[in-house]
Amino acid sequence: MTADVNVVIDHSEYTILVVDDVISNVLLLRVLLTNEKFKVITANNGKEALVHAAEAQPDLILLDVMMPEMNGFEVAEKLKADPLTQNIPIIFLTALNTTADIVKGFKVGANDFISKPFNKEELIIRVTHQISLVAAKRIILRQTEELRRTIMGRDKLYSVIAHDLRSPMGSIKMVLNMLILSLPAERIGEEMYQMLSMANQSTEDVFALLDNLLKWTKSQIGKLNVVYQDFDIIETISSVLEVFSLVAGVKNIKVHFDVQGKIDVHADVDMMKTIVRNLLSNAIKFSFTDSEITVNAVVDDNMAVVSVKDGGKGMSEEEQQKLLKTETHFSKYGTNNEEGSGLGLLLCQDFAMKNGGRLWFESEEGKGSTFFFSVPLKG
Image 1 (cartoon, one colour):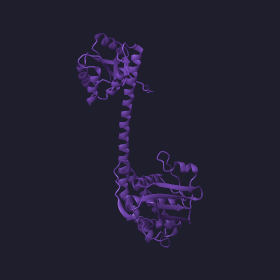
Image 2 (tube, one colour; image 1 turned 135 degrees about the vertical axis):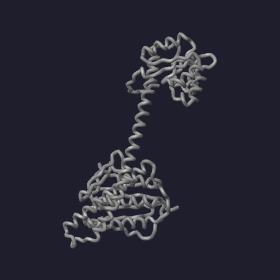
Image 3 (cartoon, rainbow, N blue to C red; image 1 turned 120 degrees about the vertical axis):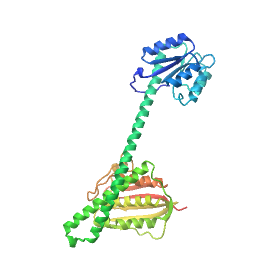
Image 4 (cartoon, rainbow, N blue to C red; image 1 turned 180 degrees about the vertical axis):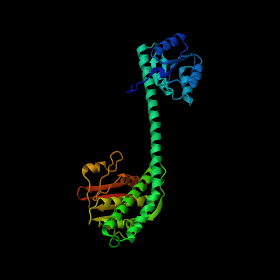
């Protein structure tokens, strides 16, 4: 078995333990491996091998099978049973070449076999191959640890930024909302009112982004748990629509939601509100002035399916292929050049799946989009 491992290694950084009860074999192997710049330590029997392996922690063990008192197979079993030595690769040196012997060797932890009498070139190639695998594994482990630390630092940074900014932005948002309601255009002038409206919209967008960022970070690092409860999804949608009436009104967009009755579901109500908020916010962003948005909720099999349909910009086939994929996700400007981060839909997809549902969409460029999400009904 071969592996294509492109790792440039310095042989002098690696130690090989040679175990053989025949002194001439030990001396020959020492010379061959030392010529290749490897560090070499030796043992003449199984007991010495176990002591040297635990103390020196070699990178590879060349282990003779036919030894008195404790044969190579027994030594290998003890090495693999010890947490200190269980990950050290072993190459058996043996004159035994029956299928049964080879199978037994692999069962007790062999990584490779070299038949006695061995060919010098073959031995060096097999040893170098195993050392290359060791080097590659170390690189992978080191890079994995570096990546883990980087991800932890990133998530901590995102969480701190989102958490520390969310509170003051929430206060600013409330103040601007109060000013918009208490200072009509005829009182402060049309120009000032437009500036105030723009500031209010920008604050709403930033607050929504920070809220999404905080929730996304918590979800990705496993600190956002799903709190299941039974509730009426119709009532939840209605409460979100009330909040967005002012935002839709700025573009003179009418939002229709005429579903009557109740649809009880079993899910995390806060996550469902987040999905509806993001889908409605996107629908408003990509809808044209004086257009309409239709929100609907139906029962399909054992799921409630909520849809948000707009008559806005829609998406091209190329854009649709990139949507809802972390590696290709993108953002685009709304009909009034509103900016977006592209994070909201990923969060919606994540929340829908965490609650046992899914998120999907239909879109046609120039004719608008419809986004759907499903959620399990109350059992």
